[in-house]
Image 1 (cartoon, rainbow, N blue to C red):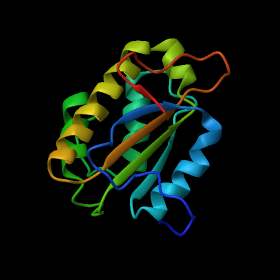
Image 2: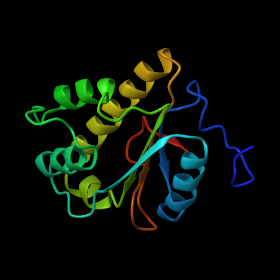
Image 3: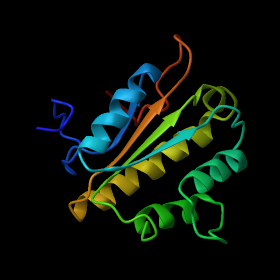
Amino acid sequence: MTTSGFDIGLDDATQAGVYAIEAPDLAALAAAARDAGLLVRRIELGGCRDKQALLLRIGAVLDLPPGWGRNWDALMDALRDLEWLPAPGYALLLDAAGQLQAQCPHDLETLVGVLQEASAWWAETGVPFWAFIAIDGADAAQPSSSAQRA
């Protein structure tokens, strides 16, 4: 049982993955992830209109090492490493992805794939790696057909 009084299994690496959620759920998920001992990073995607802005935003929030490459392969490599952010598990909360979804759906879909691959890689080592993506707007669809719905 966590200090919040409920346990939703965020410490279980076998259940970790990428989930589409409603934006109002981010605060509760952040609290639950902290209670589960995970390192939580909230990435505000509002204003991200392209891959370059998206990768810069992720790199800044995760404090990726200088010269990390700023491309999908480099992001994948960094997400598999995270030696500069040691933790028993990770929870990335991506907020306001609606503009990116509307303007560059392929980039959001690629990001979901990278996050899923990172989650699967960490699961093999028994470390939970979660990504929760909130699309702003009541009529927004899931970020990708490959993202799970929470």
